[in-house]
Image 1 (cartoon, rainbow, N blue to C red):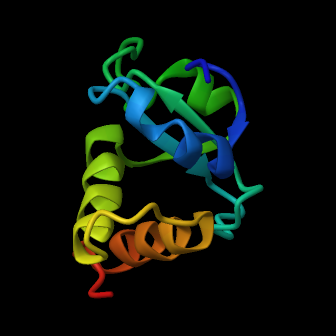
Image 2 (tube, rainbow, N blue to C red):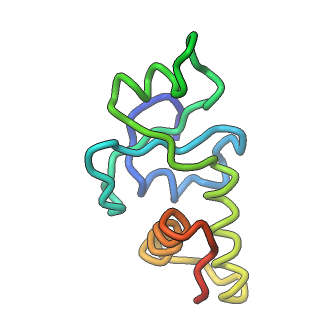
Length: 109
């Protein structure tokens, strides 16, 4: 998966270990349904112009900052650790990530 392009949450969660930890996940301002087909972008959050808070590509695609990729990686690692490092299915990753977004805390499995 490449950064700086519109993608889906499925793709991000499938490639999360290969994404730059210092980039961020941006999600739709209008509809964050947290499904595997939810549109999102992985962008460098420091790539901003002037007084803008978000990168230009996020603004053009009506995206808002969700959290850093390092946090996404931590959420997945935490869920794996709770399941004795078993491989997580996409559904469990989605639920854990949504829980973190809503509660700013790791989900107990």
